[in-house]
Image 1 (cartoon, one colour):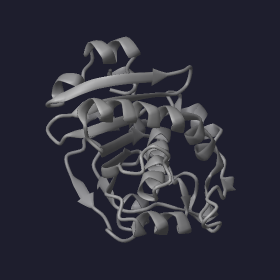
Image 2 (tube, helix red, strand yellow; image 1 turned 120 degrees about the vertical axis):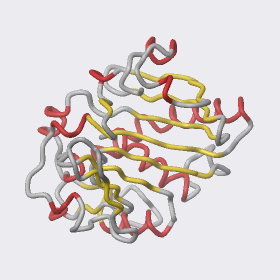
Image 3 (cartoon, helix red, strand yellow; image 1 turned 60 degrees about the vertical axis):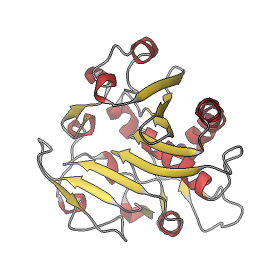
Image 4 (cartoon, one colour; image 1 turned 30 degrees about the vertical axis):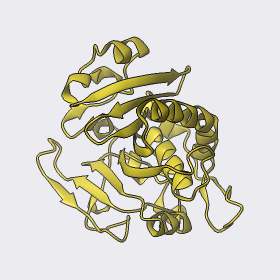
Length: 245
């Protein structure tokens, strides 16, 4: 839904809204390149945040580098991708503000986060800050679920280990031979956190529950010998980029 236009989201005139039970759209934030949606899941009494990824995946991949930054004063060994961190800090205050508006409206401090592609990197970084008590305004919030789709590698091994130690309930979904979860390269010091759920068929008819302790499970999506950008916009047999709205 986060790839749809603001009007399509707010009116419910899209291919996804009716399939979500007891869900109420809150606010949409958008600029020329970034967009996220807040809402409320009445079934689980949870504020939700969904962040859109890049609409031009080929251009995004061409401009993706492997530069890291160490933004955490309490642990300089934890490094994250500099570009993802820059985008996250651009969105962070607005995401928190919109979450708080929704939370006050529904009197809840439970938070469900989801994102696709670079949007997955944004919600990963937000979940990390919330779990560490470092998201100003969200100190009393709990991330009840973190679902990412086609998430690139966000940080180094120390970051992945720190995410794991915080017991963030992370489900990292990978569709078949999607190239994005394999950038930036593992060989350049980047490492996924668990748990990967790998749809190992193109039609999403079967999936594998990967290692619960290591996000770089060699028997899951890393076992493929080539990857494509075309698998990036179909997840669980749904078109989730703008063409599928």
